[in-house]
Length: 455
Image (cartoon, rainbow, N blue to C red; front, side):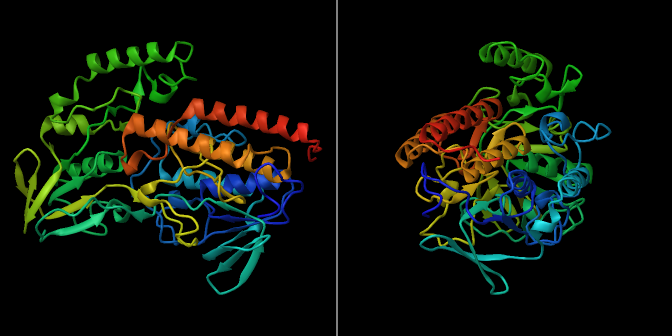
């Protein structure tokens, strides 16, 4: 796009299209509005909040009834708008949805959001993007901010031999032990070892179900609290132990874990192939006691089905009435033609997880999986985009951005392997520093080029 190519933005674009009014879309709206930039935000549902809006009418909400955040209130708050002090340390989805509604009202964002509006397609034109809406209307924008989330298109594991005669559903459709399927008191296999898998397995066990947790790869199960404080306020680089070198912090956490909790193997879980803090943890106060009591059993990956029998790696098998696949989501951009922009196997190399080196004018907010809270990172990403659109921040050359994106992706592969779950992983505090450092560098590039900062 002529007005927004890397390193050559000489004037703010006339209009920007923002897709989605969840957490990422709202902070993008706020960042642009704060700089006086024109934009329209399109939201498929009837309210703000995205997946935190329980039973969101956009059909893409994955919030189950008992969902709450896994990072603490204070660490998860937006810089401009702290969460209320009367919120618990780990608020549930109702309070998070209320928080974002209050945020939108505080900064008067509703008037720029077109609710119940689907973005059907986006096509690049010579000097703009042609955005076609679900009702056939066509709009033109000089920039597009993609904030449609990445927890709505279910991803299932590769097919295994045999047929299963019971009921199946993805965790994205799970509401509670009684909805959409009656699972209370049934024999249920939950596939996965992330936060949703463990939450659902624990809830079903409390509802009297016989639960098997099918685990392919080990992960560290961490409690929400340590030393009387939320865990992320103790172990992070900005927490109580933040003054210590990272290696020392990690060793202290390792010793604490093994002395207070013990090795995962004693609970029947596979030993993780990484150290604590080197990959996304599973946060739960309930799983380990339920495993110890036998109300949940841990097994390996599913190898085959035989009607109602499920066979697991390691040679064990069990009869099951239902399977819940808590196996994550596919990154999907249904409004782009796949040959223009897509993320096969959840792979989409981006500069700072925000800028596409080969697609100037397309920006991403919230397309990452941080070891820490997402909301403040999305807020910082949105501020950087707004600075670029306003002309105060100039990107590096496209080749340099592509090289940095490849280096980042290679680092993720070395650390996590090629699992689709880990393609967007990043460390919270180092990433925030990287955004701040790059904004400072881009501001210097803008001044060297002779641009005047916008007011």
